[in-house]
Figure (tube, rainbow, N blue to C red):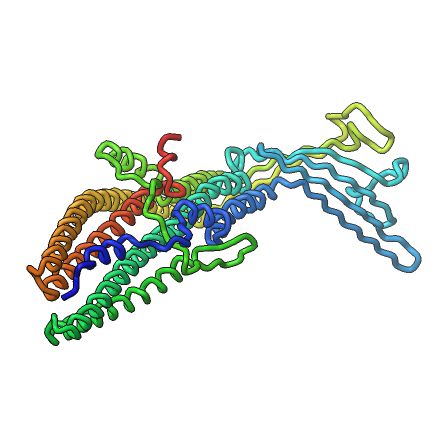
Length: 475
């Protein structure tokens, strides 16, 4: 058999790489995603939603103006002509200032609504309403504003969860693409070698230097490698498409990976933490994981709700006091007449059984207890998940090293078998066996490497680090 150049051919095929390929790093992919990925942009909307929620709650403190006008005429007689307007200015403290403006005139007005013609029937009052019972410590509007501020933490947690989930999916798709690309090139090279060996076996048979069974064996090997290559080709197409769905340009324009694009093996983004590092991650996750932060914020909201529920057990007592035509009146400024020109009132109400109030308080406390139990369980699950992922990282690092050494040893055996074939001390059948073992060892190494890289990304996701970045541990 003419095999004088087999070693050269093997070396050439296994070292050949496309010179016009464009290599894309995972860091570049994640940078594009952080700027343009629709899901990450959607996650960013959580901040706007939280601001809108707070703005809505603060609306309870908006000044409000109300006006009404009514007039009655009957048989050329004006019964009444009434105009009323009030400006209410709610404030954070339990005091409600208000300014009222009246213009009442007519022949049939109630005496209490009479306004002297000397002021052109106009009257102005400035007063306040003070709750001295229910609403003094906390009222519903203050509770809603505090709950809306706590909602910002919930929105931030949802933003981190959605962003992290997207980044994790992108990173895993990248390593699927990497494996598919490496597998494609490996099997393409093995197919080329099988094709060359088949061609040479036919030449040797033509010169009478090989038996016909050698050509059959070479053809079977070539056909088998061709089938494996076609499968790898399909897997690469699928992996490339899986990666492409995460690539977006400006203006929400979807991008597509070209066939010349290839992933880079180098990946400095995620590390293999030490034992002390994993302890730090476990401690950090107990209080800072997005799920824990979300539950903590919900418990804070319920805490405000409970305070308001307790406040509702008090009787509702509101004191009202208004100065009439002072210190501002129709003629300008005047000294307030505290004793003679004022309106004073009190409002009182109290439900005798307090069933609604007791029911609200009981429900709030049940919700609090339920969330507390849920928080404990999730903390335990997070700790177990992190520990399990770290153990998997440790094991897979060992497997990667072992499979790498195994692949190198099979490469040594393959080179030795090539040398034997060149010196007539072996045959094509044994060469194919060694090459098959080498290919399988390489695939196992690539599989282990892919899984190891995915686990290194999975760890910060399980910990709940924002944007899967370890830098948040040190801020």
